[in-house]
Length: 362
Image (cartoon, rainbow, N blue to C red):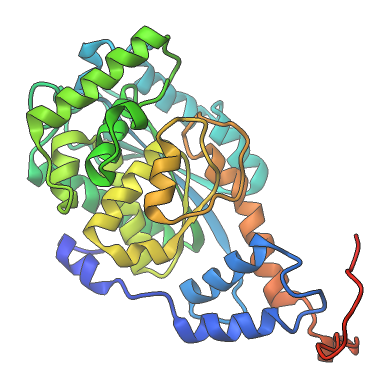
């Protein structure tokens, strides 16, 4: 386990360029037309760089779901009461949430983290307590948390991810739960990317046109009050974020330090990745975008991170649901690179690039 954030950042190395080069060469010799597996080929080469192996294999899979509450709910930005955060944590633990069902079906270990829920939660063997506070402050009135709390939340995520990796997880998904966290994520996205609150603010849990306009105004007020430094990830997190967002930023850093793939979920998870990248740009090498959320600001996040999502299913649930759903695709990408035969191994004639061939159908 790490003790300081600076130690984590110093330990993160770029993806292995030589392994990626060799993986790309192997891809070009597999028994298929070049490029015919589309994005799976890109993902497989990225995995080779992450794991430092031209023939990557996937062992365990985990989804870390961090929960936290937000003081900005006092501004009427959501239709759901704050109590839902704690209630959903219990739902995760009992296996009744969407991500819990998907994780169980797909063989993904679920790890629930109380990063800062405003209510008391009962002891549970599967609940990790990393509570930094009982929810954040209202970001329209002050910073969400202190800088020290921001670093504490990131380090909590780092250590959970390191533990998951040490327990055998090669794919680590970043999921969340927190009433009000789309507002915080809209503010983070606007602060780091420079996009306007009108462009980063979406319906969240379901808002009318007037309510959406109010929500964007709240985001603008948070930016005006706090004036975050876009080049300082901890400053943005402390002034605008949530404890669970900090934990997910730490998950990305911790996974990268262990050379594990980070499967990014939707908008809130993406906002956490913006924080992680601001803290350590190399972390981007380890990120795989699972899907494009229907939440308005997510496209801005993906563009800023230069990530292409694997799926587009109009999902906007959060919880890590999209990330878990994409994990079998990532596994298939690795398996095709590693287990498919080359033309030479299979005794199959490769194409003659000196001849003009008819297009391959099918």
